[in-house]
Image (cartoon, rainbow, N blue to C red; front, side):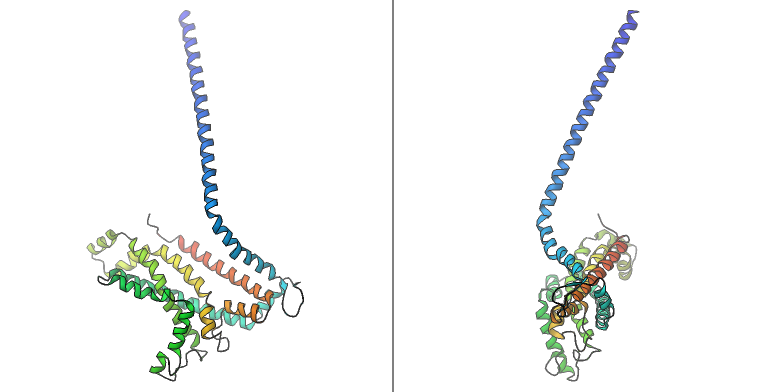
Length: 324
């Protein structure tokens, strides 16, 4: 009988000890959890604090102008009215009925379709050459990237001299060439200049991407008897896909941001053969003083770039291989 009582007392004591330990463990777990939550909030606050200066500039120079343009696009604001008048979607209707807008749209589309793949292809070729050259590698890279360091205004003046009839560089070859004066060739002359200007800059990203590819992959491919074309198509190019996604977005947005050299070289002429959306927005807003219509075109341009870049990023990103 006494033994049973002692066993019951021991069981009760053991149960009490286990409950006490469980309570202590639960308290310790809650304490650690609260500490982790506090640390997480501290890290989050520190991160937002570090981002604050960038967010301030982003809000002032990007978000605010976009919101202001969206609001202004719903108002008639030109020399015909004293104060802005709410007009709903009339500005957007006027934009879609504007023949010059569509000329600029297709000019921009042509520039993007040609400059993006040509610049990327040339940049990849230059990066491969600069990566494999044995002597003077630094000089080769500097020569390829030199146009990147030249300001757009200077680039425009250089190419104006090249295209100038009789006295220009191409004028010595054939004095009859009038590339910038002919509506059929003017936009192609600008496209050549754009490719020359940005290919070296894009090359820098591909040189970095090539250094991130393991040498063992190339050595294994050569041992298996793969040719240079097979190595590029099966290893190099797929491994450069993340770089290509980033470069694709950069070159695409650059194709719609050309204004400086266009203003110096052709001012959108002859006629509207070289006019583009951003320059036409500038003309509408500051030459014709139609702020409402210019704002509507700005909203359409931003929406177009946002949609295209989002599609490029999210669609292509799923097919990219990231080397961890």
